[in-house]
Length: 198
Image (cartoon, rainbow, N blue to C red; front, side, top):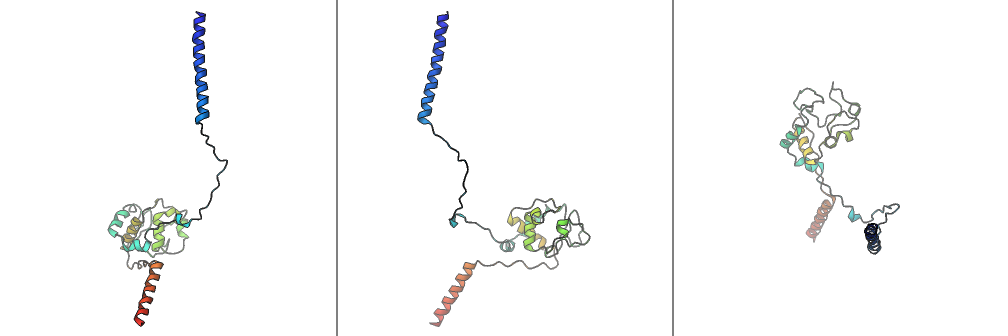
């Protein structure tokens, strides 16, 4: 019986050794070493073509195409704190009648946070757009808990809606033509003038 168990033990041990030898040989043949660098060196790209920044339409262009009807739907996010009617009462936030062009923190009797009560300037279209995108980034320390509206078109629609609640809203910003297009137009006009002279 001890001879039989020794044979079984020897067979198991031999099999285990054979598997170890085969795996060592396979590791040596098929091994690929993945070395991790001790540190990485960042290399700035000198190819300006790789750094293409795609800009959307300007605020002026977005306001030209804004839809006050859609802005009314966006205002649903603001209703719980603000009113827009002329003579409307202040809520958690000040009334927004005539807000465009009004001084920042200028509603008499409203208790503004320090971030807005000390702010200078007016609620221009540009400032209002920044504020609606992120109140906390526009005026750090504001008590307004609204996270902001990330979509540019939705902000433009809301501004267009607020603009309808004004006795004399400031004119919309003018859309500025691209400089290359303006230069091409000037060159074309010069060329036409030269041809007319000949």
